[in-house]
Length: 250
Image 1: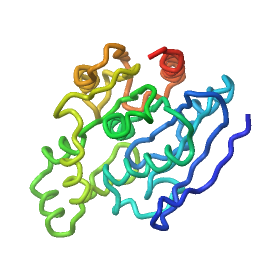
Image 2 (image 1 turned 180 degrees about the vertical axis):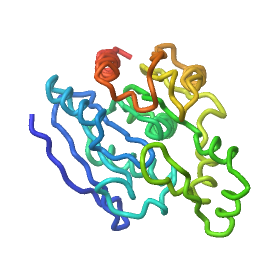
Image 3 (image 1 turned 30 degrees about the vertical axis):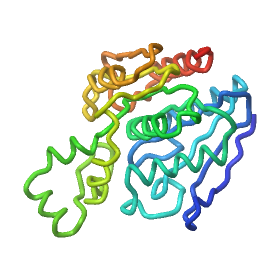
């Protein structure tokens, strides 16, 4: 089925780029990671999978990411969660299966808590709730000085150019924590996590599983998996668990 695309004004003149495939529900929504966009390997594969199986699918770029408007440095976890809520509210019908990669996992869990009626199920891919706390705890003296002086520190990245980490991002991250208390959700949850992930400790998946109150929660550990989980074998696992969640009566 053909994928359509467009732009959504989130209400303040900043437009969010999106792509979607029409189909039956519950639909699938892909929420990408920090500084990533909706054209990555996992998003492309999920789009193809949903088209093949007749399932509705939505992907989008947060403000300051990919093809969307706005400045990355103006963003924060709360701002990007609001972007996700706006996109899902405007472009989908009924509860959705949220597939959250890395930071997208954090945003998915925020939506699960704040807008449970939007969420039919959740699949986390190296989900990284509360990751700004780890960044903040590991800041060097020089990084702290840069944040104090300029409001931004450029963190080296193994995935490309350094990431701008702003003081606003870190301050907002403390307000958006999700693992500080129970996550009341009864729908199906699947958590994919590579044990060779250099960015997200693999026991984070276990902490998420413990926080979710429902019983239909499974953790899938990929012993040789990295953070991206984008290999062909990883994508096959992702398709399998997404199909499980879509078929779950919960």
